[in-house]
Length: 455
Image 1 (cartoon, rainbow, N blue to C red):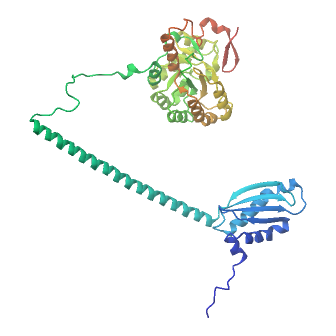
Image 2: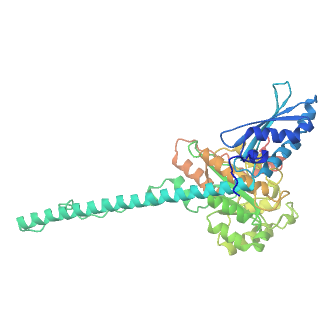
Image 3: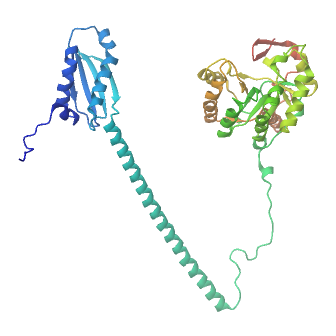
């Protein structure tokens, strides 16, 4: 016996699965109505259903707001169980019955198995279409280039034929065009001689100017047109931090200065070699923070043995020394100045051992000016330097967008020295960055990392 399909009527769930809004409205009200909620489903062109929810029972607004998460989960779960290809998401808008003001609204994507398969099929179709377009483009480009090559070949052959015809008519060899009656001269140019002092200082390793050896510096004076700034990293190298810092600096083509401690160089010689190999400057940070910074510390071990180990490991002789916590009135600093090290402080303290990444960025960007030296760390601090690693890419990008270039401390000092020698209009006076030995006793350390001259 044969049966006819003309009398078949789909069920409510089948209609709902096809995205029929009336069926969906009736179906949702069947399980939400007893809870005092009335639902109206409206169609949407992007397969995101709009579900308008009305709270029928007289309830307080706060109670309706508290039901938000539970109601959203219930609606989304029920729609997910339909496994409909026509429903990709839902926009839920809630009202109190009789009140036109929206209580809350939210949008949720329904990742049912059917929609996931449909999305995968669309993605595959899009990729196939892109591949076809790329293939068509390559074919057309090849035909175009082949046509140009063929036209060039025929043009060259025709010009050659005409030239040979002229030679046969005149009976003498032709001279190459453009080379007749020209003297044989050789012109040599020296690229290095045409480069400006600032360009040479950024590309080549430089030494600290003699005028600043044995002095204390915290920033330099540069022209307004030279937007240069120096990033410095203290207490490294550290296996967990320094390698990531080097990777970021390499990615953004930025140079920095690393003040290394002898103990960490002894423990991580490969990282110290990598810092020197990638063109960064290296300074002396002392042997370790454990030796202290007062008169009881061993100045020779802090300064001389650390420099000897750095030079033996990296091949670079440090010319800079940075005292622990920026303290200047001690035997270590005196010994470093006697040995003609440039005692390097800082003018911008990022506080990266204490604060989170957003505050670190604000500390630096708010105080960034041309010629300033920024204090950072590549050793484990209270927050394991996660703030430094998180903020460093954004910090470099923000300063580069402002026109800053990143140089090492020796390059910064050499740039100021070359600028003063070139500009004869400047009055002859001591650079503002240098602090004479007799002025060290007048320093008043008001905060850690900030040094000011007392009146």
